[in-house]
Length: 230
Image (cartoon, rainbow, N blue to C red; front, top):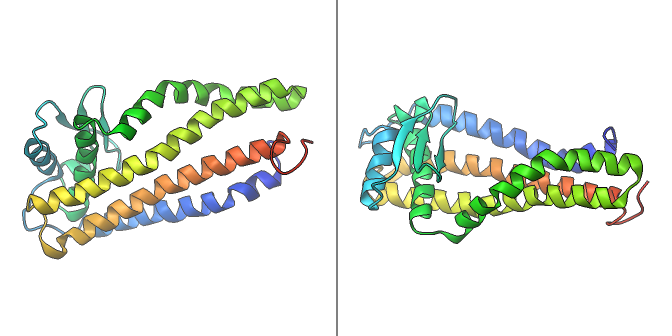
């Protein structure tokens, strides 16, 4: 199964979409990181302003190394921004910083899907370690019980990525509302932020599609979907 051309055929739509999404993210970030806003705020300043406006005073804003490595850590309540976003005064930096603030707002308001995604993290961590050995041994030995355990372990990853989609879309929606309501961007200045966030959302769609198609392939090879196992 590990060299099955059908596997790559199954995944080809997701792989193509991922390539397109990554190119869009990098291209749009480069373009709109050159376009400023009338507020002139850096990404770090935008993040602190949004957090303050929403009464979130227990979240730290820190710089983290890497390109577009921005994320919100709900455990330590820390919003980490990559150098280009932390120091950037562009529409792209504003959009990404605001998006991460969207997650902090979700956390503060008890957004159910974010809580569910966080609760799934332990299962996903275990699943990511064991699904491949279980499937390999299951198919190699012809043991259906091992195959099913591997599929269940991989399914945790699929569920996590599917739940991630509405969480990310909601964070972007909140971000765009915040930067306009607080006057961080004005008029057409929101365009760059929206386009960068749209491209970033597409990467999550591609990742979710890849995991779903991979699961369908495993089910097919196990004889549980559309045919017999060989």
